[in-house]
Length: 316
Ligand code: RIB
Image 1: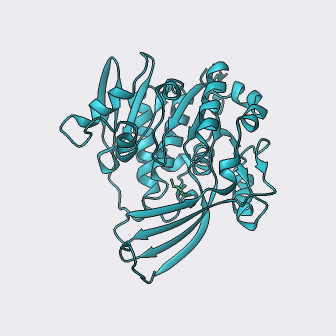
Image 2: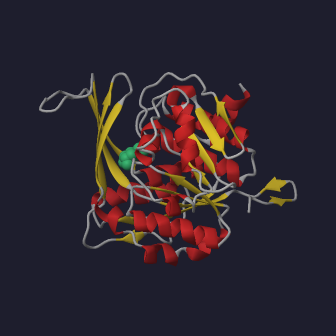
């Protein structure tokens, strides 16, 4: 199912994100610390983060009708997300408030070169259950695309993909942060979208650093003919691999300030583009454009681009 044409007006793409929310505590510093070191930062911000929530916000800014299925605590950190989801008109009917566990927290360092280190205390994210996903089955059935990541229990991720497949909804698995998954879970994803490190974690037996290693590793994830693996390559754009072919789509040039959330911008834009019926190379170009804008700004959710900005970069 893709977003339908109603008269001359394209109906908004419907996206369900089953994912994590974290409050991001971000310190900017000259360079990333080594073990045992104490360094001074030169800037600090508290912001809305978590790969799932970032993707929900990015998809909404790109014009999609978004439902976020997640779990947050009763603390003030949850309020950061709640405020933003409301501002972005994201449907939170299936968001669970957890009375026993705190909201997820990500402690993030960003060096002046734009590189980052992230440590997540997952809190309530780990309590999002398959039963919580079942509550959202009607929204999943109405959606064009469901996207999920690995900031949750893998059992919940697998269940979300299974429910979406049963409802005829296109599935994207963004296997981030890195983890190992069984072929039967991978088989539930129409699109699998690792970065290079995540690809290595999924394919420990393939030397992804060798010549042609990325394509070989990506190809080894394919479990059926209708599946696509998209590997994000940072400044080199993204490549896709299917049983019938492969290709690379170059990145847009960008002045990098902060790469936190770039993968989320990419995945959200990719989901929106697919839901709008764009062909794969066009969808990846759209996703590369969203990521290129995201890296020019500090923060995660705060850096997600609006539709007009992406359209402008694509037409420039
Ligand atoms: O992808 C970026 C996100 O990863 C951050 O917002 C942080 O919360 C971590 O989950």
